Length: 476
Image 1 (cartoon, rainbow, N blue to C red):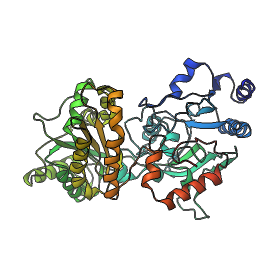
Image 2 (image 1 turned 135 degrees about the vertical axis):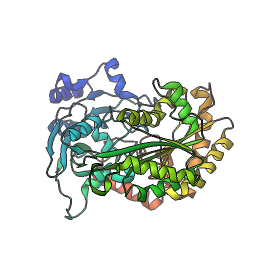
Image 3 (image 1 turned 90 degrees about the horizontal axis):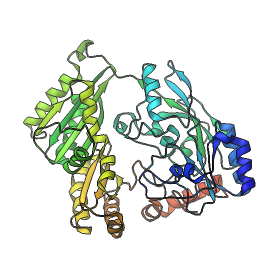
Image 4 (image 1 turned 120 degrees about the vertical axis):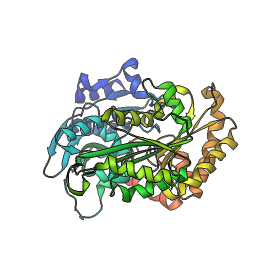
């Protein structure tokens, strides 16, 4: 393979190629450290043309390509197999913001731009790019789009799919499809864009995108409320839509177990309330109208305070605090956003990124917790997530002090119990993290034969030699 690697070097240069084992290692394992693969090389193209030439070479030589962005995924979708016969194609050198159209509310970017950089560039232009998630400081937009990332503002702005107008994609044969159209209406046949959003790099490699921007909020309110139950959380959200004049942008549910882990493992975090409670809701309202304008003069913070007061009288809220400054708001969000990191530091866990209809969350939660405890008495259910869109991270932390080998025999029975229950509730076994490697068998089990057949037909038609991220999402 030395000739193959030399030809790769001739395309991307010395800066674009990593072949030593120490240099390759960070690209070969996933964030959760569930997988450790091998690769012929880590290839880091500087532009779309280089991506195209690399893919053409790989297609000619029968070498599989594993596209990778910030490598922050939860499902192993960007990790190579263990046989060492693939390359990892990292897009992190393609990190330019190409254009910001303030009039048309769009931004054109390369796939390797970090999400936080996009958010900041939009803010500097007095605009908002609303995609927001815990890994935003290191994840890249190409990975976000390839997994159809969700995040904390889906209920108001939609998933990544709703935030994209156009794409540029390198096909499995190396051809470049230029669909960088900033059009909100385009009914010219099949929507090719949607094929690649959420496909996890199995149908092609997203290299550039036209993103949709929104007006920048002028008024914000953030609250932390203790609630007696998930039922109360859902009712609190339901009433908030009218109380906020449809300005609810985020609504997160968290159990006490997760809060305790964050306070234990994440320096600088503090409990917002004096007493401990079983459940909490973090809610944010945002408006593009300044608080001093017209009938909105009271501001969202005042309206939120009035609404939470009414909710207390109804028994939906036990105690609450409203952030008075941006620093206080960030402190509240830190309690939510550090759940995953705190869980990782605590020890082994199983991640269940599921979704059910919002109205079904209250009965689902206790049934799911009971199913976990039945499969492994003494386990620690870790429930948190986006109650506003029905996406819960219904995780299971191993008993205190357990190692991965101790916990491993329980992973399959616990996950099967949760996924069976999710399916019975008409939900999804993967709401935003994707299928990757970790849920390939589950997808084959829980999706219908018709759905799986259509997916396989698409994969075979677009990637007949199966060189694009093989073994991920669906087996062909």
